[in-house]
Amino acid sequence: PLLGGVGSEAERTRIRFLLAHPTSLQRNPRMYDDWWGELQRSQIRWRGVIGQMAAAGLHSTGFRLGRIRCPTAVVAGEVDQIIPTENARILAERIRWSKLFVIKDAGHVFPLEEPMALPLAVDWVRARLAW
Image 1: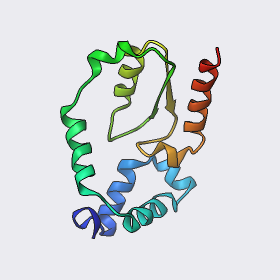
Image 2 (image 1 turned 135 degrees about the vertical axis):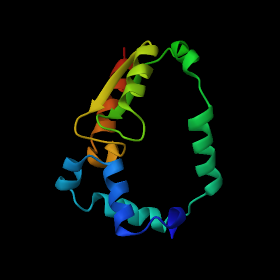
Image 3 (image 1 turned 90 degrees about the horizontal axis):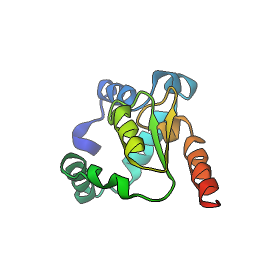
């Protein structure tokens, strides 16, 4: 099984509530299962997974965020249990022309929970680029 045997119903339930807000799961009970099915069918490149984990834990460019000189949308789920929403607030504070979009009642998988969140953030950036 994928991800070191994460496949029992109890494990999947824990992951489900770690990634998504309970309200989202109530509104769309198949959301997690559909995503899990896609993940199971995909080709996982473990080198990429390990690289992402290393980058998340070891790499920091926070001191350079002030150099960003273009409109930037920072988007986060309100109750993300993987990456705290406070991290998004810090990014938005340090990037001069940024806007923070906190998606209400959403977790780490906010694009699945609120599919229009990213298109709206992209529209905000496009509008600023048209100045």
